[in-house]
Image 1 (cartoon, one colour):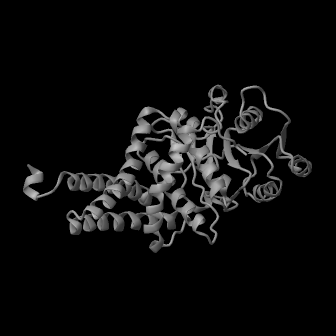
Image 2 (cartoon, one colour; image 1 turned 90 degrees about the horizontal axis):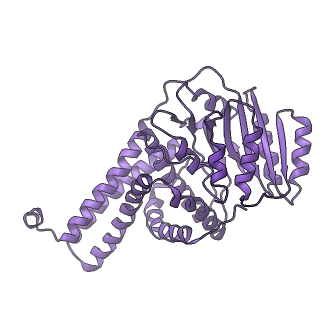
Image 3 (cartoon, one colour; image 1 turned 135 degrees about the horizontal axis):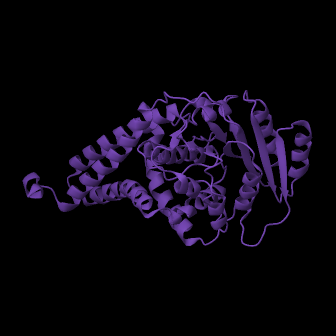
Length: 372
């Protein structure tokens, strides 16, 4: 009846409905993140164990250790696991360990049967950790301030077992980098936004922390054959309503080195998305609706423009959607140190609709992906 009254074709009605759903998702998560302000903070400092798995990251290890040494916090250890490096990383780590008593090196020469590199590196590191809180980051990442540990500790209130942080990529002058910034912001919108609604499904291993007493080494061992999943699948297993906190303070951010060519970036994202097939069904459904609505809106837009059906209505609906979505992304980017030129968003948005199906299909079809 509604279709007859308003004179809509079924395809136009579907387009408007899915556009509204898609826009509602983005606005709901975006506004929640933009309005979020961490008011309660723990003042009882926790002892921290930082776990870093590294393979052939010699030059970057130097920068990371220097940044960790600059932290104002004084109750921490860094367990740096050298996974079969061939670039002299082991020597660099040992030299720093002789100078800093808080640096504990572990050198892995060979993998036990069935283990992937990063999984075994993390397993070895966590087993050696002595402190209350396990903090995870990568060798190619750097804290943006000397108060990173303070921010992490302050979020571990009595009921909190997991703290999720954000990790923007270092900005560079290239289209690929602009797209990486855009995609990273969309990932942050989802995992941080859903977590605020009590639906934590993943974390980013470049910047997250888990209470040592809650970390499940047996689960890590159970997924030892997967290249990914040490962060998102672990968080998904441990998270429950009320036990997760997120950090949005700029002093809590970790800046990562971005890939500089498309081949390496696609390989990285394939590894990240490969764990998605192991998510809980409810999380797969929720994320599937979010992403599919984004893709379908663009697909129906192109179809309706080509068919010439109700062009004014189609463009008006899509224009409202785009303005609302881009304003949220732009404001959220400023809050999360992921600045994207507002006028570049339509093109990045369009490219995303080709990129995501490509990488998702590749991740589903690939049986084994490499860490390094």
